[in-house]
Amino acid sequence: MKQKTIEEIKQFTKDRDWDQFHTPSNLAKSICIEAGELLECFQWDDHYDLTHVKEELADVLVYCIDLALKLDVDIDTIIHEKMQKNAKKYPVAKAKGSSKKYDEL
Image (tube, rainbow, N blue to C red):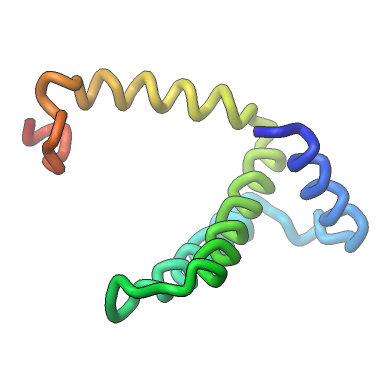
């Protein structure tokens, strides 16, 4: 994650005095709401407007970054830790080419 992007998100929130509304629960709700709007882009078929998809995806990511900032967690660290766990749950030898959940491999 580029620090410049994180700083832009922080400044945007600060300039509008929105931190008071950015509780962890409100941010988690907002992530779900925006994820629903992203899913709506694909609601009836796989034809989609890439511009709209990018806007909704950006909304999800911004709220995720806001939540990470609010919880004071390092984004790169939590992603790396989760990827390590996923690598153990989904070893290449068992998971390659399969969509099965880890407990079904």
